[in-house]
Image: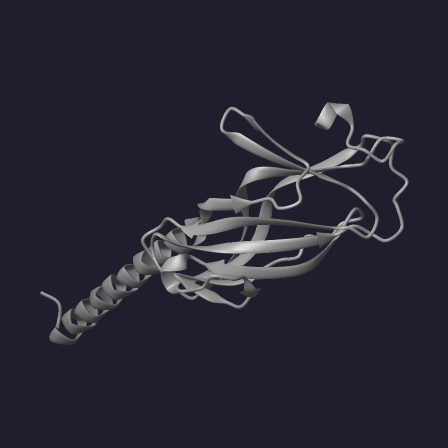
Length: 194
């Protein structure tokens, strides 16, 4: 039989190992939950100024005409479909050669009392809560050298959010496709995109 000091040291060591193992399992669970947590498409969208809308199955497409200096505005909702509260920290500008982000506004669901869009500010989303985001894009004042009837499109928006203190970044699906087309030689939407 080992001396009492050795037995106490062995018990302490086993106790420390058990605590370390529990902490390791908790840390792994935290990382798995926070790194796999995702925001989803909500149930709202709007496309003021679109010259056409179409459906292909359950996919909605809103089409806009690219005119130098023109703004394009669309809305989509971001939903927290998970079981944890999150903080939507920022909707990132998606600037490119064809457009720049002029404005990002928000309109939380009407049950919160907001009726008109306001400048975006960080917002807490409880489980099954959502917020409506309005994005205004501006085409450059000088026309890009694009072929007639060219187009670009996108169907996601990059956002930053925090879940259980972990900062995250994600491309959130818009729930629809935004297509911006260059006009034909007469300045009208091309027949292929009507």
